[in-house]
Length: 114
Image (cartoon, rainbow, N blue to C red; front, side, top):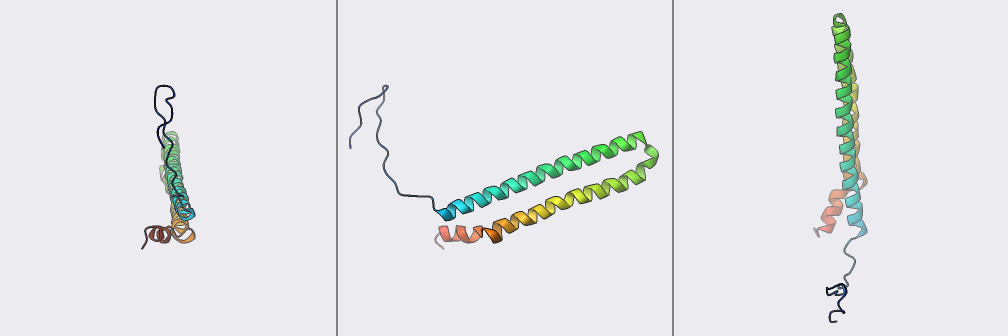
């Protein structure tokens, strides 16, 4: 099929027809990898902000009451420890989603023809 008549000073050609190139397995793999990335992004950002807030409040408290420094440090480390448990749990759940629920390595191996 030849070129169509010019429209706005350029030639337009019809696009060749192609088959479906995206399978449902590849969509599942892509969505799972995207979800994994978003989980890691949210956990990293939230943990960093939380650590910063806890440390800032501890510094403010020590500036107001220097004699309470040992007690404030105890609660600072407890707060940061509890705050850091959340990213570790979320990371474990994200890997569970990636490797067990969606079985992304198996899907990728299947798509690669292995």
